[in-house]
Amino acid sequence: MSTKINSFVVADPAKCIGCKVCEVACAVAHTNYGVVTAGTMEDPVIPRLYLVKTAEVTMPVQCRHCEDAPCANSCPVGAISQEGNVIIVSEADCVGCKTCMLACPFGAIDLVPKYVKGEEVTQRILKSETEDGLVEKAVAYASKCDLCVTRPDGPACVDNCPEKALEVVKPAALKKERNRDAALSLLESVKKFIG
Image (cartoon, rainbow, N blue to C red; front, side, top):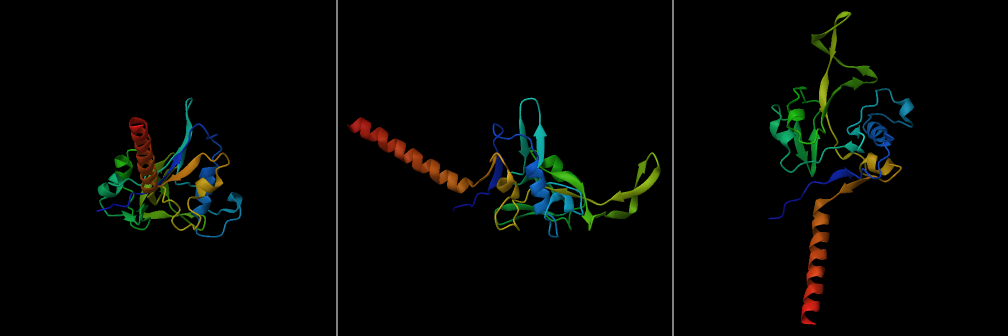
């Protein structure tokens, strides 16, 4: 039985310059209305990937769409599922419990506030305590890369990276290429041995 292995986006830290174009492209790709520039967005820029900058490395961290999907297996309400070869979070079903964040081995999931037409959606009952007293608490949900499944050209981060530091890895194609290379290498070794 052949299993379809999930694709994912990987970054080359040697090429990444930390410009955050990938983050902006991701946020724009996931808006529910037409956006010409990031400056015309009604909602805050909330990407589904997260740029990490340290003294040694700069690169975005993204979901690997794991075959065993610890996030989906840990979700108590079933808000994370597999559609095709992509692991998807249902914003409507997510209760913001953070279990998926704890389960993700890559730290690729974040809890983000929900916005509708530029307005933060708040909860009806729960409040947050601040220096100014109790304020309405935002509705939050798990957010992560979905490989831009609704975008015909694929992941916006890959298309917009000025340094071409991001690429979509398709493990099934990679495996075929490795198998072919191994077979050709073996053939060359046999030819040398025979003579």
